[in-house]
Length: 134
Image 1 (cartoon, helix red, strand yellow):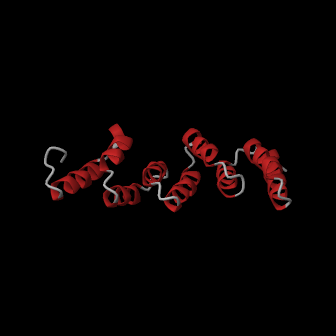
Image 2 (cartoon, helix red, strand yellow):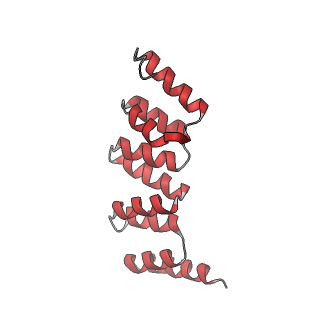
Image 3 (tube, helix red, strand yellow):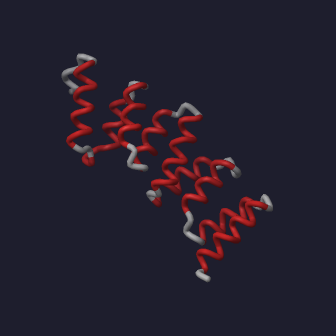
């Protein structure tokens, strides 16, 4: 059996036994970023650690978990950031639009902004009659 698989099974057993730090270490060694992020958010109350893991690993599934955590806390900027990391640009755009944080959304996209995203942003600003931003 592969060592990552063994480590993952061990981590799950640790979780069941409520040995969360031990489980976190096993997930880390197994390179299971998604499970580690979930554990940090749900059991360890270490959201900053989860954010750091996602920012470093670029785990799309981990980013979705963090985005949901941010939404639950009404941290709209955090939700936008991690939705973008999860490649959920439409959801990120809708949150940015609803919370009037479009500049932040555009800043995060930077040079990676697609033509479609740029057009959506331009339409947003046109509707607000902010032609300078559009």
